[in-house]
Amino acid sequence: MTTDDMSLEAYLAQGGVLTSPANAPPRYRAEVMKIMARFVDSELAGAAGFADVINAAPGLKERIAAARIVLEKTSHAEAVLTLMGEFGANTARYAIHHPWAARLPRDTPPGALPSAHDMRLSVFTYPLQGWTDAVVMNLVMGLATGTQLGELARVSYRPLAEAFTRIAPVEAAHVRLAREGIARLLAEGRGGEVDAALAYWRPRVAPVFGPDDPARFAHLSAMGLRHRPNAELRADWAETLDATLAELHPG
Image 1 (tube, one colour):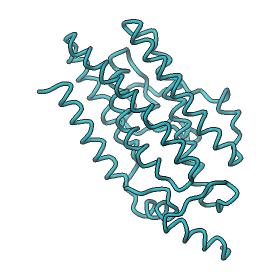
Image 2 (image 1 turned 180 degrees about the vertical axis):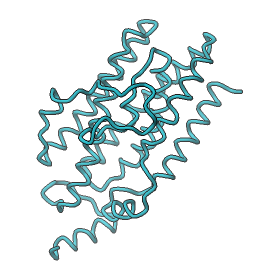
Image 3 (image 1 turned 90 degrees about the horizontal axis):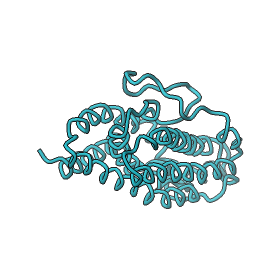
């Protein structure tokens, strides 16, 4: 390790930021690439899943909402993929060379991944099963995404932090669409379907925050790439979800 590397690590540990891949040491580059790849893969897989349920929507307003989610998630993937290209990633493969709509069997246990080369969050390996299922998944995972983006918008690679800051309010709008959709389902007397979907998706969203690994958290914190541990983020998501559900579905 060079003296320059040491001074840069100290700078990052003290809250410094980087603005160009040219300034990033190899370990830092690798971790930033993981963050970006995980996000891009998840957005593309999530968009592919919602594309499959557009025609299951019960009305034109709902179809437009689902199509909007597909468009915006794909746009978010493109924005971060552009930054990956600046780090030397082969961005072309993301457009045509991966089966983003591929899913594992519905009864696969929570936390499974389709392959070691697929960086999507595990929740995006499970198939959506009808409109109610899709709306509930959008709420439960959308709240998790909001929690994660609050953390990601603080990463020390400034162009990426700025991208996540721009993405966050759009993803929050997806949650509002899900809230509206669930409120409509409940008004139609479909609370049993909503509860069944919640029982399925909640344990499959929880693993997206990752394991509680203090050593890895310390490693990433030293580079300014993490600020709050996984357990804390998971607890915040659970609290927000419980409060949302209590408001939508009291009792």
